[in-house]
Length: 281
Image (tube, rainbow, N blue to C red; front, top):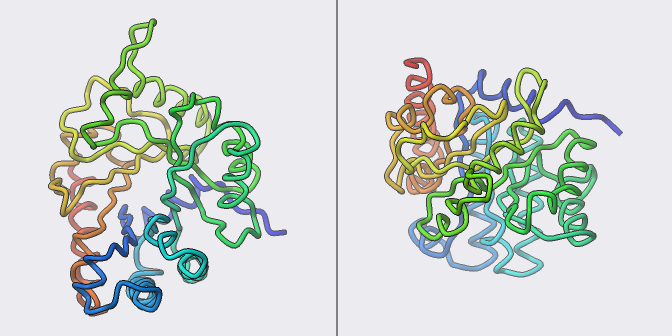
């Protein structure tokens, strides 16, 4: 079995070559209808195939949202498997946005589904939730290291409800979100050029200078585009860590479909704007 380079190494190269942009694949019902597609498996397949055809091999990362495929049952999951395979075959890294989190053998099974080489849904990285305790993620951490994959751990999310947990202060005076960042920094210690264990940090959160975002790993940053953040805002949010930020844009690109050229033009504009923002730091 071919051993992959570590995810962080592959991601750093893709970001440097193509620009640090992650495009989400989020086939929610309203977007399918906007594209003139039915909200069914055929529409799902047409949508996903079009996004992959337009952008795979052009952007650094694509991030399918598993829930939008799972809602169609086994046939939807089959479309997801094909989407992942085709995007990876074209040379684009795939982050599976499944936000899995559990304990023991169940967490190990989730990890095997997405991070074990040869699994139908094997992806370059997986989003995970640490809110059963960071240690509950250990099966996923171990398998990611073994397979050359990565993780993106929910740390500072932009949804208002997230603060109930992430801003809670521990006995040591550090809040939960900062604690997750510290765990990730430890996972990535000594890795070059970039560690494989990243954090999810919302691009709409404003000044985060009170947090140590220098985790020597990638920061997946949802919120650019339709949610209100712009590439120019990224410097104010992430500061010196901006070079390791992977901004995620979904609707801001996808609303330009189903036209292939329009999708490519939109993703190129975002990539160029983000690249300029990084260069200005």
